[in-house]
Structures are given as C-alpha cells and as structure tokens.
Length: 332
Image (cartoon, rainbow, N blue to C red; front, side, top):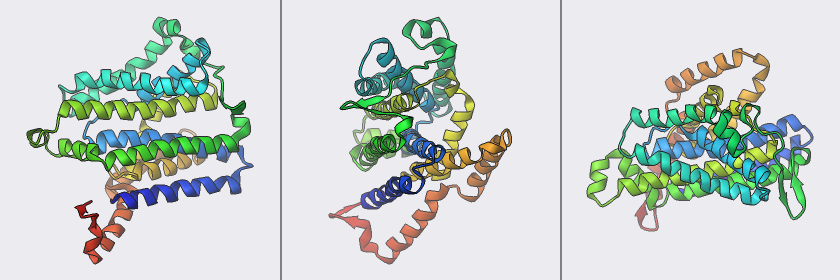
C-alpha cells in the first residue's frame, strides 16, 4: 500500500472515530469501548510491525504494555511525578526493557524467539505479585488502585470527563499510529522487510541485522509503553490479571482480523474486535468460544484479514492505471 493510501485509510478510520462522540457521547459504556479501541490499536500495530514486517515472532507485546502501565503508575504514585512526565518516562523504561529482551533474541530465530518473549510474559506476573514487585511499588497481588489521572493546565482527564479524555487519547493514539506508518514507509521499514525476506542477502547489502532488530524492539516497546501508561492513568487501577491469556488471545485476533503484515489493518482489526468482544460480553463463557471460532474463520476465509479486501480493490485500481504505482520517480 502506498504512503498516501495508508495515510488516507488512517485518516478516515480516526475521522470516523472522532465523529462518534456526537452520536454516543452520552453513553459511558460505548465511550469506554471507543477508548479501548484507540488504545489497543497502538498495541496491535506495534505487534504487527514486529511480526508482519520485521519477521520477529515475539509474544511479549502484552508484557511491554503492562510494564509501561505499571512503570508510569509507580512513578506517579511512589515518586510524585506528574502523570504526563511519568508516561513519557515509562515509554523509555519499556524501550530499555525491549532492548534487553531483544539482545538474546538476536542469536535466536523463529519459535525460539517466541518462547523467550512468551517466557518474559509469563514471568512478569509472579514478579509483580512477589517481593520484588512489592519493593518497587507494584502493590503485589492487590495491584494499584489510586493512580492519578492525566492533568494538563489544571484540567484532569478522567472517565467522568469522558469526551475530552476520549479526544486526548485519540490524539495520542493517532500520533503513535502515524509514527508507525512513517517508520514502515522509511528506509527502516525497507530494512525490516529485507531482513524478513532474506537476512543473509540483506546483510550482504550492508543492512545490519543487529542494528535494525534492536531498533524495532526499542521503537515498538516505546510506543507500547506510552499507550500502556495512558491506559493506567485513564482507568486509575491496574492488576496483574492484565497478563492473563485472555487478553493475549484477543490481541492476536485483532492482528489476524486486520491482516498480519498489512498495516494499517491492525488498526481496523482492533476497532472491530474490541467493539465485538465488548458487545459479546453478555455471552459469558461462550464469548471465548465465539472468539475462537472467529479465528478459525479468519484463517480459512480471510488469510489476509479484512485489509486483504481493500488491498484487492486497490490492486485492481493499480492494474487499471499502471502509472499509479510510481510516485516521484520511485517505486512505492
């Protein structure tokens, strides 16, 4: 997908989201769903960059999200740091953790990277619940219950002021998604794809696997940590139950629904799956069964996700107008 097409798709998606409070702004339940759509759009997009573009099969994205959320909350509660500064610092903390996790993964490939990153995910819950977690201020098994809200110029963005808070989170989510878009369409994105397709050939052209793989770990972890911090300050409470496999599974469904490696399909997938999952909450235990059936359907019927439908339509336009595949003298 060309840069202008990608930007247009993101603009339309977020534009529609921006208009929805006009219709449902007085329904807190729906507004909370919309906020969650915006938050998980960033997490799903970062994971899509890792797996779909860089070819790194990591299962640690939820762990980085939780690190960002807890990091920002602990800084705000235990060290009295302003939430806005705490969120930014949590992004850097999460980026550092991403680099630490990425370093041993550079010597591994395929399922071994997945095992290491999933091990980080599984180890984080007992760590936060145990003595180490209590020492750093995680609240242990009880979690954190008094996280201060984001405050700008004396105005507090809370769930009681849901519409202004929604628009703040929309701007943060949009900024993160646009950063991902520009990264994908830059020489960084080309390097990611080259390493994914043939690492040996890419390295023979002077592309450093060490540099770019660490870079993708750092950047995606940073953005995931930022949006994790936003999540914590919006809801005001955090629990280690965020690391349960239910959330991990739903995030995977978002990527499959949008189309793995077809950014910004992860954005559309997150909007559809978060909204669908919340609306299916009355099903209780059958919701998980329904989500599982949805995964099977997507894999069989739509291997490229919902985004694949749009790509086929765009490819038809390109074949009808071959000159449209060139921009400024370069192939896009």
